[in-house]
Length: 441
Image (cartoon, rainbow, N blue to C red; front, side, top):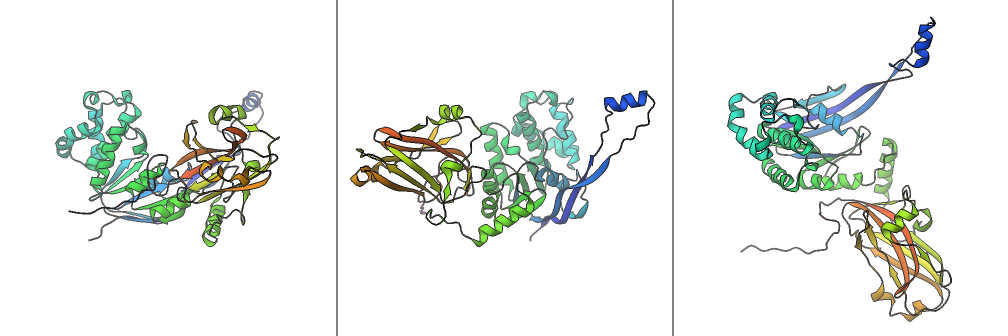
């Protein structure tokens, strides 16, 4: 039998912002008061809606992930679920025991020991002392705080505090556990324990998980919500939500983002640069200095006596001087250049670097271009590089272009930053094109 755990209908939460005045007196205000002048302090109030029109449902054994940029309203929504805030409009139905960990150290008394805080937090989740005593050893063991459990919580690191809070929640919350970035804290071994436990508990409990790590959302959640500036942009299938999330920009208004999503839905992006092309050589922007980029990603070099009129186009548009893709997108790069004299070999390189300067992949054209003597003769050349599917998982990557008269450079230039969103839950930096098969015996 399906058991409804949570139901939100048209939920909204507003905060009152004060402006036009200050509660702290200025020096001029104090001086006027001393001199006997009447001082008028005026202030105005405006309502800021942190959340608006939030609708969602959750049934027992189902997990939902919430994604969004900082300030989207994620933490406000979790506080509403846990009754730490009261909605200003709409209704929230809760069925069963609901608890969780949404703020580091929330609910812990810093002067009390970890052991005493277990009792306090567990009682808040409705547990009796008998139930706490029965599970106490298990809580301490899972949190890995055996030798620290009788020390004040104020002496704990952030990872230790998270471990204790998570352990309490999973032992005493019966129906719905709310977690905010919990899986981002802690060492590798503890994260693995959390992952295994969540998978095990999903059969009997529901989870609401907020994370900036889209892999966690893809791994643990049955559906997802994308929040932006207090409104739901997309709700439903995890992969579809992640694809929509991949196009968001911080300066997007709700209306602009919805409009761009509709345009993307109505028009399938072209990957043919002859029909739709964007000049990335001249329109990319870099916040880093050229000296910094050269130290990280290699030198810039132009031999204009041999190569000129270099142009580079992308099949996808730039946004604020950078490319934004999800890791299932295609991308075509078109390189045009003019050889002024005959050379012995032509080779095109397109290295991709991680932000720390490590080269992740270094594709080049030697198999295809070095045997064609026509490419070595003077004249205009066009080279296409097509990534049938983006080869990277989530991250930010730096791309350079090299034109070589093998083995020496004729031209080398920094191209563009590419920002990748992970929409299929794969791990590592580079995706692999593996064919999986199995049989049972």
